[in-house]
Image (cartoon, rainbow, N blue to C red):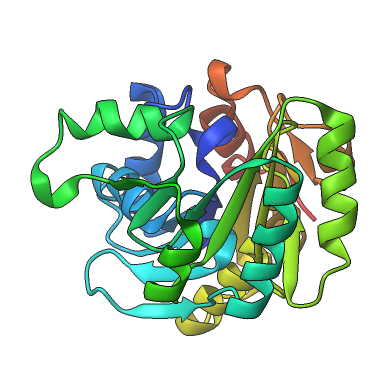
Length: 276
């Protein structure tokens, strides 16, 4: 019997940046009715991730910022908060500024960006439809160093770059810096947290809190920042839109996120179609 399901959001549970399908909602609700826990595990900040968790009526922990921040949506308990050390963060920012890279920095509640672009632009539009207490905090500022000096709670830095060769160069250099964990959640970004941070570690802490063995967990993902989670779970599921590297390490590959991959996989697994 499976007891816990953990799923990434973008490219996995969500059809697009804005939301999930009615079928996905019904699947999650059915899992919870059967006594399973459902955990959102994402690179997004907690405030954004918790909106999806609450809309699915999960009332459980959320793994946000790729595992740097784990918090219960109902009780508010913070199970884990791993901030990037200030010295490492400033060194990284100095390097990226010299390279003229575009990046944003996150704490649990706020995204700091030098201009409204991509996901930041989406959040600004979304905020117009949300109640004040649910809005994602976005601060547009050129002075990131001042932010770091006044807010020592930075959990993640995200670099956006469309040229793969440039992103690879930055990734290779930053991966060698002490105190930093570097992963990708898409082919055009790089996400950097404190060394040792991962979704898998966050999932392990939650499972230990509940006394749930790894073999009773199913985890879903579509990119390499989900790899640690898929490895920890008894059954790791890669989406059809995932890269080949993640597919090779998964126990099962389902359909894409736009073709109900999550719901199809859950039906198949619970019917006994996959075992480890």
